[in-house]
Image (cartoon, rainbow, N blue to C red; front, top):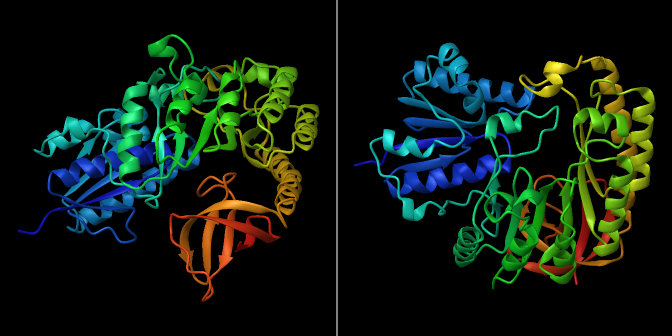
Amino acid sequence: MRKPTVDIITLGCSKNLVDSEKLIRQLELNGFNVTHDAEKPHGEIAVINTCGFIGDAKEESINIILEMAQRKVKGNLKLLIVMGCLSERYLHELEGELPEVDRFYGKFDWEQLITDLGKTYFKESCNSRRITTPSHYVYLKISEGCDRTCAYCAIPIITGAHKSRTIEDILSEVEELVQQGVKEFQIIAQELTYYGLDIYKERKIAELVEKIAQTPGVEWIRLHYAYPTQFPMNLLKVMAKYDNVCNYLDIALQHCSDSVLANMHRNITKEQTLALLETIRKEVPGIHIRTTLMVGFPGETEEDFAELLEFVKWAKFERMGAFAYSEEDGTYASDHYTDDVSEEVKRARLSKLMRVQQNISMNAQNEKVGKQYKVIIDRLEGDYYIGRTEYDSPEVDPEVLIHKTDDTDLKIGAFYNVNIDSAEEFDLYAHVV
């Protein structure tokens, strides 16, 4: 008999992707064929793992649900299932507005999906997953939720309180993944630096990273989504000590103006932010810092924005993203502030900020020309092997392009030393040493 096929579509962040990968494995253990993000979904069952963080993400989730609903109307789909952040937050509204959806699950109850299909949830395989990224790297989720109370952020409303996994559980997953050939681990959490406080009563991120670094077969560890307030400084010692902990830190700062930071409820000052950045760069020489900034938060003045521009020029972030404030239902900012910066001004400020960063990023790229770096090869694309240095996280950071010739037969997932020949804003061109 032909196995039934399930199409899983993942929207939003890498934390959602981890959930999808674990769901795929459970479905496969139960005898299903499963596709992930297929260009042309064709299964009898569709599962959409939604994002509900910001307006654009919500809109994308709804549009995909409606597309799948049309497949159902045409008789091409028997069962339409929605899970993830959007349904976690807006379950009752979605049930009323999208009757085409057969079943809704939130962000944390998707395991029930297996049971509701009349199948078995294999608890002994709860950490097993089918890797959907290139097989040499994965995203490793160490906690759920967030205890921070940033005024603009709806994530704690969606995910609830911070909940760490145990060190033993995480290390067991790392060892299993290494056995499958994984070499590179992107450590992710909603708030990385908070790890361990709930179960160990102290921050344990440094100890966790050190234990992962000591695990045989772990070649690269990269840290994502740190928070600046009460940053655990002992983490920097671990980063400096272990060669397989990449000199890379993703730490969202959002702003630098004291008045804006106070209104955002970030619990940090500009002076403290500057001191933290100086300490990070001193303790981990050569580190590349990725950050995210926000423009147009309620009450942001022209003076506040000018201060932010000067801050970016001073900090020289090697990697930076930015976005304009958008009001999120149920947040402190939505309930207590007036969204008083016009969309036109927001767009203008965002554009100006990114132009400043463009020059900084280009300078950081140019500084690599003529130097040697270790790179991992992700794929072959056309005439080029595409790789990354330790300073480059998948999908969001620049890549290294190596021209394929008769003399360059490189292995996907292998490491090579390369010399950087030239630089563009988003790409480095190199040859193998």
